[in-house]
Image 1 (cartoon, rainbow, N blue to C red):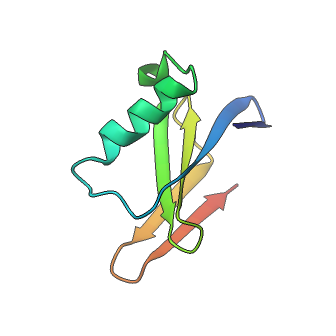
Image 2: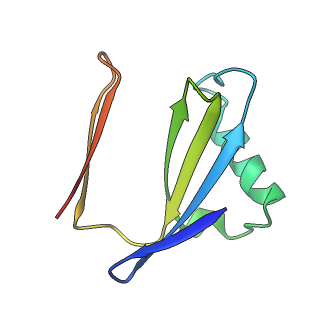
Image 3: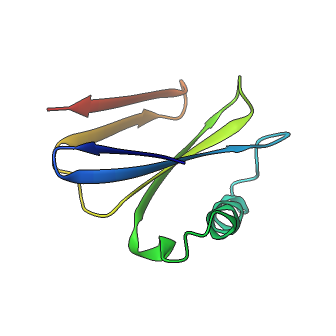
Length: 87
């Protein structure tokens, strides 16, 4: 687990290695189980963002508490593009 702050916002970042990408209908269950194994018992109070990194066969899971006014996520599933914009 990694922790970092941007301004007063704290982020927790986890990396979970897998053999293959997990089906969409099972991903929440997988992530919540992994967080429990990391002793994150109050994970439901966090906002969650995750992404699968195909080249590394890893899920990157980011937890944060508040709505982030400075973070904008643009996702284009068709082209596989994800962009974060930070003010």
